[in-house]
Image 1: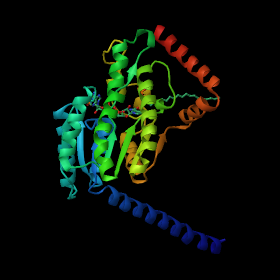
Image 2: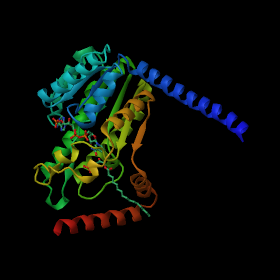
Image 3: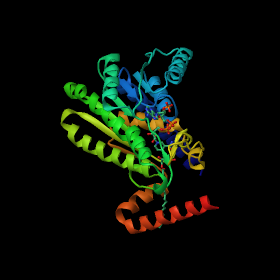
Length: 311
Ligand SMILES: NC(=O)C1=CN([C@@H]2O[C@H](COP(=O)(O)OP(=O)(O)OC[C@H]3O[C@@H](n4cnc5c(N)ncnc54)[C@H](OP(=O)(O)O)[C@@H]3O)[C@@H](O)[C@H]2O)C=CC1
Ligand SMILES: CCCCCCCCCCCCCCCC(=O)OCC(=O)COP(=O)(O)O
């Protein structure tokens, strides 16, 4: 027995050592592809965008951080500079571009010019900014449907289209979009949000196919719940703020873990990432393979939610 254990222990330790070495090499290589790349992140003032800023900054990317609120974005930049100073790392000071994605396409393309003026080109565009919706269709103003579509769909596609010609000229670039599980399945009382994410999925799938010949990568990331301010900032049917931290959001994934997944997806040039637990993943498959069951499940969910609101 002792002799067997004597053979197994060094084997296990050797195996562990190899795994650790592989992980270390992977990290170093990841740094190498991201290092010096010009990475643009929208919605960098909070949540997942802020965490993406942290991980790409730590990987020594040249960041262009976008947001609506200069002061909040400035806070992020200060924090990144301080972290780099503490760890005595040589990193680039991020550039900031302030604009609202729900503005007109002309305003967004002016912002794109400002983004390009930071470093002359863009290697990676991360379309992250977004807003969610809470409300039933009967009571949701059409203006709310439009506003959510503007922020989550028309803004990001206007920005992407304005930056693409420069990527096409260079025959190089990577466009990432943070969609959602709700880009694949539509759940009740989220019509504006789910519709905007389905549109996002479709547009960026088309883009991926069209950009292949220019060596431009497209990644659609579809996460499940993440612990951010998304539900707090969601809009209701009349356009007012929902202002509630939903339990599902509070129990969601840590944004820093999701940001690491985004970094890896860029490194591996992944075309798609579905980052969800077993039930939402199963729901995505059921929607395709057994739609009538999916519709029943969603109708039951809608009934239950309405009942708890009525009580
Ligand atoms: N949290 C979750 O459970 C999930 C989130 N996602 C997606 O992740 C992305 C990031 O959201 P998350 O970090 O969770 O939520 P947050 O609310 O924390 O962050 C959203 C970011 O988007 C910005 N933003 C909102 N509207 C606009 C606008 N009109 N113009 C410019 N920027 C805007 C916000 O800026 P400001 O600070 O100025 O409001 C903020 O920086 C979204 O696309 C969301 O759909 C996907 C799946 C799950
Ligand atoms: C025969 C057995 C069938 C079992 C099927 C189970 C079906 C379960 C339904 C699961 C629905 C999951 C919805 C997940 C939604 C989600 O993760 O959304 C992410 C977001 O974008 C969150 O935004 P929100 O504003 O909604 O907080």
